[in-house]
Image 1 (cartoon, rainbow, N blue to C red):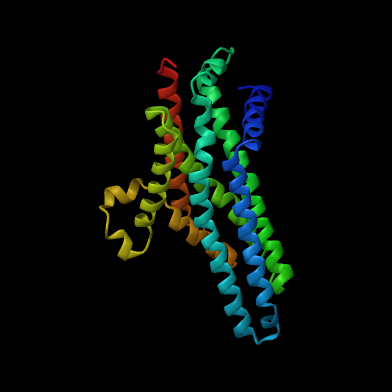
Image 2: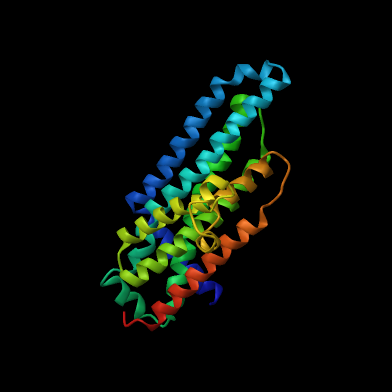
Length: 256
């Protein structure tokens, strides 16, 4: 795929995203989330004059709020971005796109990358804005919070790739969005917590994405003691690649 072609496909997705109410809602809820965090940081500004123990407690509370944003943004991405992902398969539009001298799998991959670009901008707004308002509002600067951008983007990529596979198979964006949300919920059962992990068999646990483990790795990064939880990231990335490859192969063999 040439850079010019990839740019054209991604740019087409971004232009469509600007006119979609669901994508506007995605950025609106992100702005509201940052505003809520700013309110919390402003309310705790006086605590910055307290002893180190109080500061550590304040920092931990603010970090927990950011980790909540991690899961909330994944849910919002699964629910609000899936319609944009599947819109290129609508009757009339898909025939128009396939009339171009472009391989079918390239059209689909360009749409997926375009959706990931939309989410990347959204996550920069959320976590970049959160880092800024926490620093200005409470005096606690956490530059490592920006690690949440690539971590959340990888997790969202897993959800979008699973949604893409469902959309290609059943041609239903509603079902694809539901499947992505269900996958997010099921992934909590693959967490390192023994109480949750005991609910699933080892085989089922092995194939589910590790969003909770990625969250723990993100927490360690923000605390300045990175453990990376590399296995959690690797399993999740492998699932994204597998679902995307399967979707591209299925679409390549379909009639329309």
